[in-house]
Image (cartoon, rainbow, N blue to C red):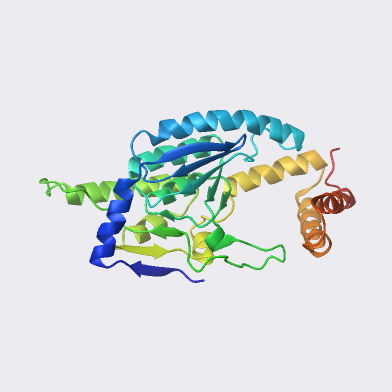
Length: 281
Protein backbone atom coordinates (compact mmCIF):
# COMPACT_ATOMS: atom_id res chain seq x y z
CA UNK A 1 0.00 0.00 0.00
CA UNK A 2 1.41 3.36 -0.97
CA UNK A 3 1.28 6.36 1.34
CA UNK A 4 -1.70 8.60 0.82
CA UNK A 5 -3.26 11.73 2.23
CA UNK A 6 -6.63 11.46 3.90
CA UNK A 7 -8.65 14.69 3.91
CA UNK A 8 -11.16 15.19 6.68
CA UNK A 9 -14.41 17.06 6.10
CA UNK A 10 -14.95 20.13 8.33
CA UNK A 11 -17.32 18.12 10.51
CA UNK A 12 -14.98 15.14 10.64
CA UNK A 13 -12.07 17.42 11.52
CA UNK A 14 -14.05 18.83 14.45
CA UNK A 15 -14.85 15.29 15.55
CA UNK A 16 -11.18 14.37 15.12
CA UNK A 17 -10.15 17.24 17.40
CA UNK A 18 -12.90 16.30 19.84
CA UNK A 19 -11.61 12.73 19.92
CA UNK A 20 -8.16 13.98 20.88
CA UNK A 21 -9.56 16.15 23.65
CA UNK A 22 -12.05 13.63 24.98
CA UNK A 23 -9.66 10.80 25.81
CA UNK A 24 -6.65 11.43 28.03
CA UNK A 25 -3.72 9.04 27.80
CA UNK A 26 -4.08 5.82 29.78
CA UNK A 27 -1.20 3.52 30.71
CA UNK A 28 -1.74 -0.13 31.61
CA UNK A 29 0.73 -2.93 32.35
CA UNK A 30 -0.61 -6.07 30.70
CA UNK A 31 2.38 -8.39 31.13
CA UNK A 32 5.75 -8.40 32.98
CA UNK A 33 7.33 -7.05 29.76
CA UNK A 34 4.36 -5.28 28.11
CA UNK A 35 2.67 -1.93 28.76
CA UNK A 36 -0.02 -0.14 26.75
CA UNK A 37 -0.59 3.57 26.17
CA UNK A 38 -3.89 4.65 24.66
CA UNK A 39 -5.44 8.09 24.10
CA UNK A 40 -4.34 11.68 23.69
CA UNK A 41 -0.75 12.52 24.63
CA UNK A 42 -0.86 15.11 27.39
CA UNK A 43 1.33 16.66 30.08
CA UNK A 44 2.13 14.09 32.76
CA UNK A 45 2.04 11.05 30.48
CA UNK A 46 5.84 10.83 30.49
CA UNK A 47 5.83 10.24 34.24
CA UNK A 48 3.13 7.57 33.94
CA UNK A 49 5.05 5.75 31.21
CA UNK A 50 8.31 6.10 33.15
CA UNK A 51 6.72 4.27 36.10
CA UNK A 52 5.49 1.52 33.78
CA UNK A 53 8.92 1.16 32.15
CA UNK A 54 10.60 0.82 35.56
CA UNK A 55 8.37 -2.21 36.14
CA UNK A 56 9.02 -3.62 32.65
CA UNK A 57 12.80 -3.43 33.04
CA UNK A 58 12.64 -5.88 35.97
CA UNK A 59 10.68 -8.35 33.87
CA UNK A 60 13.02 -7.79 30.92
CA UNK A 61 16.10 -8.68 32.97
CA UNK A 62 14.65 -12.09 33.82
CA UNK A 63 13.34 -12.65 30.29
CA UNK A 64 16.65 -11.80 28.61
CA UNK A 65 18.64 -13.93 31.04
CA UNK A 66 16.35 -16.89 30.35
CA UNK A 67 16.59 -16.43 26.57
CA UNK A 68 20.32 -15.77 26.32
CA UNK A 69 20.00 -12.13 25.26
CA UNK A 70 22.05 -9.15 26.52
CA UNK A 71 20.47 -7.29 29.42
CA UNK A 72 19.81 -4.28 27.14
CA UNK A 73 17.93 -6.24 24.46
CA UNK A 74 14.44 -4.67 23.87
CA UNK A 75 12.28 -7.65 24.75
CA UNK A 76 10.08 -5.30 26.81
CA UNK A 77 7.75 -3.15 24.76
CA UNK A 78 5.21 -0.36 24.82
CA UNK A 79 2.06 -0.75 22.72
CA UNK A 80 0.66 2.59 21.56
CA UNK A 81 -2.66 3.73 20.12
CA UNK A 82 -2.93 7.50 19.86
CA UNK A 83 -4.20 10.18 17.50
CA UNK A 84 -1.57 12.60 18.83
CA UNK A 85 -1.48 15.43 21.33
CA UNK A 86 1.27 17.36 23.11
CA UNK A 87 4.47 17.29 20.99
CA UNK A 88 6.76 18.30 23.85
CA UNK A 89 5.43 15.43 25.95
CA UNK A 90 5.70 13.00 23.03
CA UNK A 91 9.39 13.96 22.59
CA UNK A 92 9.99 13.33 26.31
CA UNK A 93 8.38 9.91 26.01
CA UNK A 94 10.35 9.11 22.86
CA UNK A 95 13.62 9.93 24.62
CA UNK A 96 12.57 7.85 27.63
CA UNK A 97 11.79 4.91 25.35
CA UNK A 98 15.16 5.23 23.54
CA UNK A 99 17.15 5.62 26.77
CA UNK A 100 15.73 2.35 28.09
CA UNK A 101 15.89 0.36 24.82
CA UNK A 102 12.15 -0.23 24.62
CA UNK A 103 10.37 -1.72 21.61
CA UNK A 104 7.38 0.19 20.24
CA UNK A 105 4.36 -1.57 18.76
CA UNK A 106 1.25 0.10 17.36
CA UNK A 107 -1.78 -1.66 18.79
CA UNK A 108 -3.50 -4.14 16.50
CA UNK A 109 -6.27 -2.13 14.83
CA UNK A 110 -4.97 1.08 16.38
CA UNK A 111 -3.30 4.23 15.01
CA UNK A 112 -0.27 6.43 15.59
CA UNK A 113 -0.94 9.88 14.18
CA UNK A 114 0.60 13.32 14.51
CA UNK A 115 2.80 13.70 17.64
CA UNK A 116 2.50 9.97 18.34
CA UNK A 117 5.07 9.52 15.55
CA UNK A 118 7.67 11.10 17.85
CA UNK A 119 7.11 8.27 20.33
CA UNK A 120 7.21 5.68 17.55
CA UNK A 121 10.55 7.11 16.39
CA UNK A 122 12.00 6.54 19.87
CA UNK A 123 11.70 2.76 19.66
CA UNK A 124 14.90 0.84 18.96
CA UNK A 125 12.64 -1.81 17.44
CA UNK A 126 9.25 -0.89 15.93
CA UNK A 127 6.22 -2.69 14.62
CA UNK A 128 3.02 -1.43 13.02
CA UNK A 129 0.66 -4.24 11.90
CA UNK A 130 -1.10 -2.16 9.28
CA UNK A 131 2.06 -1.09 7.46
CA UNK A 132 4.92 -3.51 8.06
CA UNK A 133 3.52 -6.88 8.93
CA UNK A 134 5.78 -9.42 7.21
CA UNK A 135 5.04 -13.09 6.70
CA UNK A 136 7.81 -15.64 7.12
CA UNK A 137 8.26 -15.73 3.36
CA UNK A 138 9.54 -12.17 3.63
CA UNK A 139 6.69 -10.75 1.56
CA UNK A 140 5.01 -7.65 2.91
CA UNK A 141 1.36 -8.36 3.58
CA UNK A 142 -0.56 -5.57 5.36
CA UNK A 143 -3.41 -7.02 7.38
CA UNK A 144 -5.59 -3.93 7.35
CA UNK A 145 -7.03 -1.74 4.62
CA UNK A 146 -5.29 1.35 6.00
CA UNK A 147 -1.86 2.39 7.18
CA UNK A 148 -1.44 3.15 10.85
CA UNK A 149 1.31 5.80 10.89
CA UNK A 150 0.07 9.26 9.91
CA UNK A 151 1.67 12.72 9.84
CA UNK A 152 0.44 16.30 9.58
CA UNK A 153 1.36 19.80 10.72
CA UNK A 154 0.46 20.51 14.35
CA UNK A 155 -2.20 23.10 14.99
CA UNK A 156 -2.52 25.67 17.74
CA UNK A 157 -5.36 26.02 20.21
CA UNK A 158 -7.26 29.35 20.12
CA UNK A 159 -5.17 32.33 21.25
CA UNK A 160 -5.32 36.11 20.89
CA UNK A 161 -1.55 36.13 20.31
CA UNK A 162 -1.13 35.53 16.59
CA UNK A 163 2.15 37.47 16.24
CA UNK A 164 4.27 34.60 17.60
CA UNK A 165 2.76 31.86 15.40
CA UNK A 166 5.43 32.19 12.68
CA UNK A 167 8.26 32.12 15.21
CA UNK A 168 6.67 29.20 17.06
CA UNK A 169 6.29 27.13 13.89
CA UNK A 170 9.90 27.74 12.85
CA UNK A 171 11.10 26.77 16.31
CA UNK A 172 8.94 23.64 16.29
CA UNK A 173 10.35 22.57 12.91
CA UNK A 174 13.88 23.05 14.27
CA UNK A 175 13.13 21.03 17.42
CA UNK A 176 11.48 18.28 15.38
CA UNK A 177 14.44 17.96 13.01
CA UNK A 178 16.92 17.85 15.88
CA UNK A 179 14.87 15.17 17.61
CA UNK A 180 14.56 12.98 14.52
CA UNK A 181 18.31 13.24 13.92
CA UNK A 182 18.86 12.24 17.55
CA UNK A 183 16.72 9.14 16.88
CA UNK A 184 18.61 8.34 13.63
CA UNK A 185 15.48 9.20 11.63
CA UNK A 186 15.80 11.40 8.56
CA UNK A 187 15.14 15.06 9.48
CA UNK A 188 13.27 15.42 6.17
CA UNK A 189 10.38 13.74 7.97
CA UNK A 190 9.81 17.05 9.79
CA UNK A 191 9.68 18.98 6.48
CA UNK A 192 7.12 16.57 5.07
CA UNK A 193 5.15 16.55 8.30
CA UNK A 194 4.84 20.33 8.35
CA UNK A 195 3.80 20.36 4.68
CA UNK A 196 0.53 18.55 5.44
CA UNK A 197 -2.42 20.74 6.46
CA UNK A 198 -3.59 20.12 10.05
CA UNK A 199 -7.02 18.94 8.83
CA UNK A 200 -5.37 16.26 6.66
CA UNK A 201 -3.44 13.10 7.54
CA UNK A 202 -0.76 11.63 5.29
CA UNK A 203 -0.57 7.89 5.86
CA UNK A 204 2.89 6.41 5.51
CA UNK A 205 3.50 3.21 3.57
CA UNK A 206 6.08 0.56 4.45
CA UNK A 207 8.46 1.95 1.82
CA UNK A 208 8.07 5.48 3.20
CA UNK A 209 8.78 4.28 6.74
CA UNK A 210 11.97 2.66 5.48
CA UNK A 211 12.90 5.78 3.51
CA UNK A 212 12.56 7.94 6.64
CA UNK A 213 14.51 5.29 8.62
CA UNK A 214 11.39 4.58 10.67
CA UNK A 215 11.55 0.89 9.76
CA UNK A 216 11.65 -2.09 12.08
CA UNK A 217 15.02 -1.37 13.71
CA UNK A 218 17.07 1.68 14.62
CA UNK A 219 20.28 1.43 12.61
CA UNK A 220 22.60 2.05 15.60
CA UNK A 221 20.82 -0.55 17.72
CA UNK A 222 20.96 -3.07 14.87
CA UNK A 223 24.71 -2.56 14.48
CA UNK A 224 25.26 -2.88 18.24
CA UNK A 225 23.30 -6.13 18.31
CA UNK A 226 25.18 -7.58 15.32
CA UNK A 227 28.52 -6.82 16.99
CA UNK A 228 27.30 -8.48 20.19
CA UNK A 229 26.21 -11.55 18.22
CA UNK A 230 29.54 -11.75 16.35
CA UNK A 231 31.44 -11.68 19.63
CA UNK A 232 29.09 -14.19 21.27
CA UNK A 233 29.42 -16.71 18.43
CA UNK A 234 33.07 -15.99 17.56
CA UNK A 235 32.32 -14.95 13.97
CA UNK A 236 33.67 -12.35 11.59
CA UNK A 237 31.25 -9.94 9.92
CA UNK A 238 31.30 -11.98 6.71
CA UNK A 239 30.75 -15.26 8.54
CA UNK A 240 27.88 -13.87 10.58
CA UNK A 241 26.16 -12.25 7.56
CA UNK A 242 26.30 -15.44 5.50
CA UNK A 243 25.23 -17.67 8.39
CA UNK A 244 22.29 -15.43 9.30
CA UNK A 245 21.12 -15.27 5.67
CA UNK A 246 21.15 -19.06 5.35
CA UNK A 247 19.65 -19.56 8.80
CA UNK A 248 16.65 -17.29 8.06
CA UNK A 249 16.18 -18.90 4.66
CA UNK A 250 16.10 -22.40 6.14
CA UNK A 251 13.84 -21.72 9.13
CA UNK A 252 11.36 -19.91 6.89
CA UNK A 253 11.33 -22.86 4.52
CA UNK A 254 11.33 -25.73 6.99
CA UNK A 255 10.12 -24.50 10.42
CA UNK A 256 7.14 -22.22 9.77
CA UNK A 257 4.64 -24.31 7.88
CA UNK A 258 1.82 -23.15 10.16
CA UNK A 259 0.81 -26.74 10.85
CA UNK A 260 3.29 -27.70 13.58
CA UNK A 261 3.05 -27.16 17.32
CA UNK A 262 5.13 -24.51 19.08
CA UNK A 263 7.34 -27.24 20.55
CA UNK A 264 8.09 -28.68 17.10
CA UNK A 265 8.84 -25.21 15.67
CA UNK A 266 11.25 -24.39 18.52
CA UNK A 267 13.06 -27.70 18.04
CA UNK A 268 13.36 -27.05 14.31
CA UNK A 269 14.77 -23.55 14.87
CA UNK A 270 17.16 -24.88 17.53
CA UNK A 271 18.55 -27.45 15.09
CA UNK A 272 19.33 -24.75 12.53
CA UNK A 273 20.92 -22.56 15.25
CA UNK A 274 23.31 -25.42 15.94
CA UNK A 275 23.91 -26.01 12.23
CA UNK A 276 24.91 -22.39 11.58
CA UNK A 277 26.91 -21.89 14.77
CA UNK A 278 24.41 -19.71 16.63
CA UNK A 279 25.27 -21.31 19.96
CA UNK A 280 27.37 -19.98 22.84
CA UNK A 281 31.10 -20.37 22.48
